[in-house]
Image (cartoon, rainbow, N blue to C red; front, top):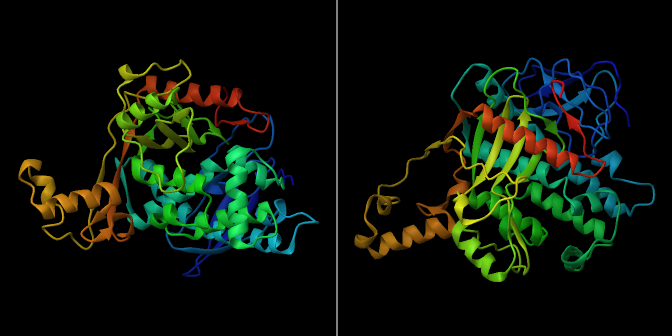
Length: 419
């Protein structure tokens, strides 16, 4: 379905009755299901049509309130999983799951939209940080995970009606299909996707309704990646906006043997995944995941730092050892009890049995003051917006460009400026 070449206006109905207006400025094919809509800001762009594109929107007047529904006033309706992933011969239960995934994703996207607007507004006003609640942070992390995963081979396979894949993935899908008595493999994939979107952020690693591979990947991001925000050096330096740059995992370090894998896992403090059995063989560890959410802003999920001297990197790898520090200041609401983090102010040699238990609970289960820290939804999180040097900006841009050149024909570049 092609978008209208003329401008399309979308009105969002809000709780207080005041409409929010989004202006679409970029014609082209809309990506099915995962369309970032207002994530990406675009102005007078010159686009190279190398394949299916995202439809990019520029934010207009936004009322800071909860968005509950939307409808198109002019032009085409945004394609979604309902009209792109449902086909004439699909099983009725499969069609039902398509609709459920669509509804769940729309709610997730609407909530993430407000968090990203707060970030865009903070950057436009020259702020050095953005403040989110932990609930908003959880939603944003889940949204970015879905955006990143949607370009993966196994997600694409089941998104486009294929019933077969390869190896471990087929086994996982078939096991989920049997466990829930589903009619076909695609229903199992849709159920897993719906469960991932609906399950609370902290409950995903233990959910048996989600494919083990996705659970493990989500847990790795949740427990062992710090969210950082980086801005381009100055106006005129723009990130490339691409399908794969929304979730580009880069800086991969190969481990060619089980011994190397074990040592690398120790060096990186790799997660003890609960999503499924540990896979043998080559291991790739992406040291940074990059989400270019606007021409001037990128969200990074950065793994614990690994000294570059420990491993040899290829020229195409992006370990980003010189990233400027990006801190997150957390205000706990309600405040923690004095004993909850007393162990952190003591030397480990004088820890009491209670201190040892609290430290272990926090390190292994992320339990703080008797509650999983991710479930403390009212906590306030102030995330710094750090500026990249021009050298680092060029590293990131070059890597995104190279990754897209080496991708298949369905990936294409979207840049606010001429390359």
